[in-house]
Length: 430
Ligand SMILES: NC(=O)c1ccc[n+]([C@@H]2O[C@H](COP(=O)([O-])OP(=O)(O)OC[C@H]3O[C@@H](n4cnc5c(N)ncnc54)[C@H](O)[C@@H]3O)[C@@H](O)[C@H]2O)c1
Ligand SMILES: N[C@H](CO)Cc1c[nH]c[nH+]1
Ligand SMILES: [Zn+2]
Image 1 (spheres, protein in one colour):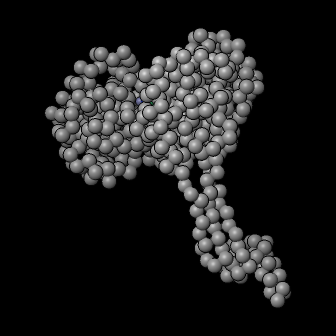
Image 2 (spheres, rainbow, N blue to C red; image 1 turned 135 degrees about the vertical axis):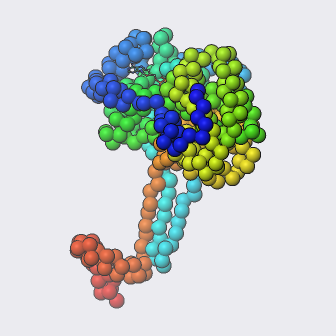
Image 3 (cartoon, helix red, strand yellow; image 1 turned 30 degrees about the horizontal axis):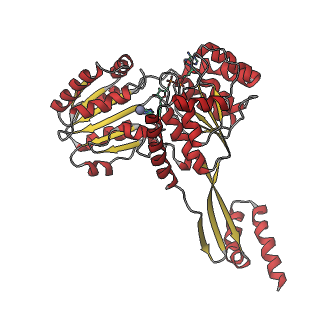
């Protein structure tokens, strides 16, 4: 991880570029996967599991027996931790429910808006290098609270043809029953087109590697909605001398260990603090089981030393990090200046991993700068909002002439007539 001292905006922009996503190359791989799944259904899924996951599957869907057996393989300690996380995530997502909105905008013209669940949703749970059972909570809890009627979960099988027991345990705790042993772009294609075992869905959710992310983008060509591009994890830590360099290093490493294409950034006003933090990174890295992955991610990573608060905010809002940690004395002042970030962690006792697992917020967040125009997953992601209007006789008499004038001026006489015919009818009633 290199240190940039008071760089110009050209230099910090260049240094903070995310590792290149090989979109062209990845699309070349996933195009035939989509074609094959569309044509051959389950047979293609079995073939790709053999090719990419190294296992010959006989069944795509997880059986009830497998789900029951999974519970015995998850320690009581972990079951209890999952329960705490489940409770917090449920509380925060239930609190996001919105009452139906009703507004009488003029006498007799009543407008309403109501959240209605998306019926069929597909949840992707990554399983390539780490069994992300926490992602099950992040996606399934809001899907259930929203009231989605069909929920399918896809996750890659291991070499024995199993999904990690903690993923199965968590899915069953939340009430999911349809779980498929499919990973990568083939899982996304299956949820897009449907196969014998997997129904086509209306919207696909979940993070994943570049094949999954590109697959989700491709799914949108077929009328399927997606939550957002949620790719390689990243964090930006903004810290001053009041922060603890060991805490900062631990936070940087927590996201660097996700994948070799992850990126972490430190922004600080003190060169000395930057040096201390990077020394801690080297020290803590040695003991990590995933140090080889983290080391590669750190190669894409930078510490930026800047004195001015204005430039700091410029860097953060330009980078638009998936996760932003603010560990400075006047933290709330900084919070007010943030306009682009997936999720913000405030103060030195708020590690990013608390949000990854159990604080209650959602960890499925926009990466790669998409925090500029996307939100993270929330209850809203699982509903669409239908609007309604009811116009009474009195309302039409009041509003009708406005519509007539506007329609006439747009040269759309049929639109005008739909009002005039009613107003004339009401006139003749008298
Ligand atoms: N942004 C977020 O909210 C968030 C949350 C959690 C995880 N993540 C990210 O999710 C990612 C998880 O990636 P992962 O790889 O561990 O699991 P994954 O489940 O996303 O991918 C594994 C699958 O990729 C496919 N695949 C692998 N190599 C392939 C190849 N050469 N050709 C075609 N397909 C291939 C296989 O089908 C395999 O089953 C990480 O990058 C992590 O940072 C992001
Ligand atoms: N940090 C990831 C989101 O970028 C989510 C996660 C799951 N488990 C651990 N972390
Ligand atoms: Zn994480």
